[in-house]
Amino acid sequence: MKPTTRTLATALGGLLAALPAAAQDFPLTLENKFGTTVIEEAPERVASLDFNGADNLLALGVQPVAIRYWYGDYENAVWPWADDRLKTTPAILRGDLNFEQIAAAEPDVIIALWSGITEQEYERLSLIAPVVAVPEGVGDYSLPWDELALIAGEAVGRLDEAEAQVAEIEAEMAAISDRNPGWEGKTASVAYYWNDNPGVYTGADIRPLLLSNLGLSTPDAVDALVGDNQFAVTFSEEELDIIDADVLVWVTDGSDGQRSRIEELALRPALTAHREGREIFTDALLTGAFSHGSLLSIPYALGELEPRIAAAIDGDPATEVPD
Image 1 (cartoon, rainbow, N blue to C red):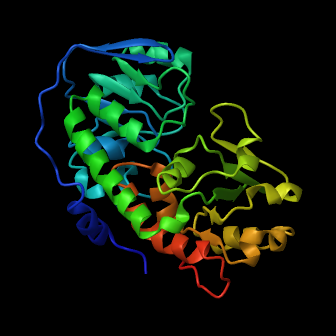
Image 2 (cartoon, rainbow, N blue to C red; image 1 turned 60 degrees about the vertical axis):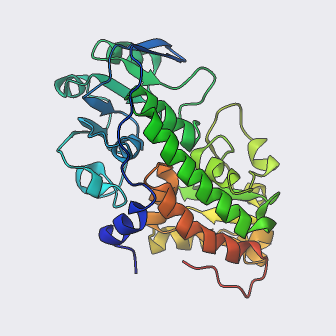
Image 3 (cartoon, rainbow, N blue to C red; image 1 turned 180 degrees about the vertical axis):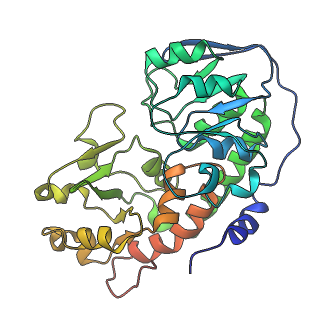
């Protein structure tokens, strides 16, 4: 049975309790790969163009005036681990950026750290409000979860809260590592099957970056496929061996059809991860939490992943990996 919104809210409440706002100096200057952003004063109206960005703002007590829809059939584009935090009705941005819709929300600042905006879009958005974009040398979707939270927290004047919540999640990750010392030095691939092709997330993606905090690294064969800052790559079914690892996480939408297609891959039986029972299949909710990589979703993802990884990494096919 999947956890309810109430269950998630209760489980996360202790970890992510709201903290009082602390003073932070403005004007604030932030460098990004497109230029320099100056935020003159602590913003009151914040628009999020990040596909996962509403979560971190809500965790910090900020009610976004605009939220970017990613996927999932949830009201106001907010997933179960975060929906009790949303107290307003923001503009929902769907598809290509609608600059008129964003301007109509009258933001004081625009957060675009996990948005994939181009330089041209950055320039147009900057006519509406200061834009917080990814730093120089960082891929569009390659900021680690903690930096996403900290930069967003600084931009909205709540850096202290962001630091405190990041520290609590880091403490939980450290506790998981302490409970599972055998994970250190092991490898993990995070793979998927989409549009009739298998794919894998690279070490620059938020999902493998999260696992790296638990001692699990991306196989060299995966990262050898891509250039700097690429977060994912597809490959032919004949190349399936590149994703073999001590733990193989298949992220799915929870449908029987998608899982069946993965299970039917012709070369899957040749994978050590398959033969030794090292595979994990995520459902839609865990996939979403794992993929959002936010202050609100990570505690849920960690709680669900730890027993699955522990069961998979022992290499004993007789050990049942929970679904």
